[in-house]
Image 1 (tube, rainbow, N blue to C red):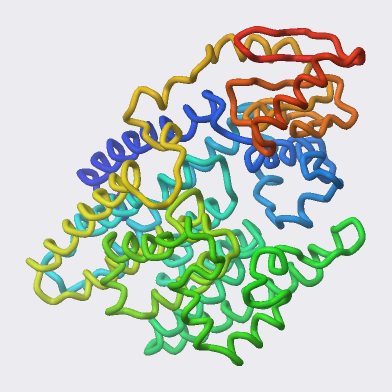
Image 2: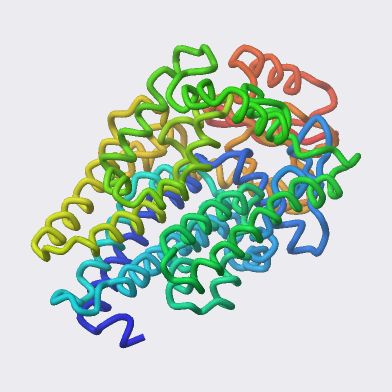
Length: 494
């Protein structure tokens, strides 16, 4: 530890990590406390975690109108690994670990950049790696991800720097372990890691052993991707249904992997144009793609053109964003840019370490850190991409406030027994999801209690439909009113 982290830098890192732990907590944990996490996705994850902690599959009642094994929808195994901690941290468990993994990923960036410095350089010290770690912690994709619930691709992305580090150190067993952990984080991770490994093979092409190992890792990741989506996920589905995300989300290219591959070869010009054009016809998405490219380039991504191996690693990430049917996925919001963070920070500082002039290394390193911070600040206030600004702007008072008394809402939720089945409005679901029966309003199903607030977003209903559904339940002879205050209502089935 002393060799990897010199005492002077380790103290600075400790202060830095504590600072970012506080910042990330103010962003993520405060949102959860203020009911700015939702049924999709933290509610889903918490309910799955509850089932895994009780040693059975999660046939999620939130995925209405039909029950589905959660692993057949998203193959995410970290919820299983982290589920025992739910007994300690409750509904905050996944959010706490998400923050911890981001901080851990920063140390991975530091370790890798430190390990690739030229041993003959006069500045062979940890300043440059520490700046790479800062660049990573400032990166806009981390803040947009932490501001919106929990997602397993964040966990997977945070392990990538450590995969780089152990690969570079030729510790193949540990590198393989990290590759496997990334692969099981989410079903799209192995496809990404196939490209990451291919990029490493290109980057280390002059080192025969590392090149060949990287090729094997790439083949292994490709095989895992097809095994998961073609065999494992359908086998876990109710009726053996095929993996549906490709058909639903990428219909502009085709309804299956085969059709998409055919489109790539048959009409490459259209595919290339789709990287930049609005293929949905919805004018609200006109500037989303360009904004992502601008943020990527100005956050230091322009330096990756000097090492296109890193651009190859990001090709599937750009593709899964830009080819999606939902224009919100094209932008810089939510968790859809998190994979850029480790590759950008590592790639940018890989390029900087190869600059011959030491003065220019310092200028480029400090410039990259400053621009990473500037673009993140820009994302808070001025962006085409839609953000819930109250959820995102942790430096404003409204981030810490709601239009109703939050503590009274928590007191009201205590009226619901822990073992009762509940139908709840989206913002209340994550707080009530650690139970067997949980449905998102308006799917009442067999719920014993119903919870909703007229002060919250009516999603997935329109405001008018929400008010009609709420009024129907409140006036129904089948329900007793347990709580009705501050425009929040709790009903109990008679």
